[in-house]
Image (cartoon, rainbow, N blue to C red; front, side):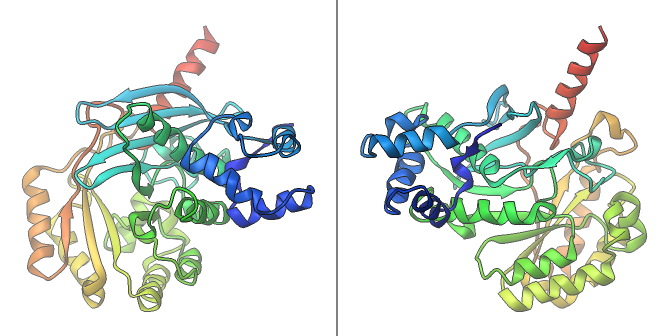
Length: 358
């Protein structure tokens, strides 16, 4: 039986677990210092713990569950990691460098059931959810990569936008956020963390009620139901009539700006008509809205889509700007490697299948 990752515990959960096993609760803070400040790889390195406590940890828990399979490095400094988990499943994690620091994009599920027609993540349906420890460990693996450079650099921002739908794995995602945000651990500021959802309306209400400062992004990609359903099948379950009231509730409850992600697909959703429809959809919430226009990264298996022309992107942007909708075009990272989310994982799985046939 696989041991539980110690990264799965919040600080309070670890203190309670230690107490249940005959140890003092204050040991939890010591252990967290070793995990997140000193970033050790083995329990034996925790020199201020007594031998009984170390034995307890070694018998029941593990520090590492992810094994690096592939590391792709881009000319712009973006690094995509492919990790293998203890059950053999593969996940992706991406490190991006910005002028404000290092940001990591994490995965929350093995595969994805949302089925967006343009996305590489959905090429393989969901196998399972990641537990909180497996999500936290992605950050730790990337942080240890930065540590190895000897330049005292740290992960400062997180985007929960990798493979899977975070709100379809809600409880583990929330525990992950609490762990990485805790000041006694990695202490990554809540306002430096963004969670992206494809539009699970019920969970947007729940997230609004969490009373946390973590940012929310919505993968919108179309301004009307007909088009959105065509490219995102989740719109059948949560059409705009259900989704936008959830967004309104979030904005009213939190008074925090929301980002609307909009991938521009040539001759599909990039016309001036769609730009004007988007203005109408967001006009009553423009003061707390930001539209992130995203150039499409082509995926071999989705060859019905291609990248919008530069002029179409500019025209779309101008219409939003002229109508008071804050907007920008996303700066691209890693275009010379398997840039699309889920692309590296999908290719690797296909390679393994080909090997087995041979």
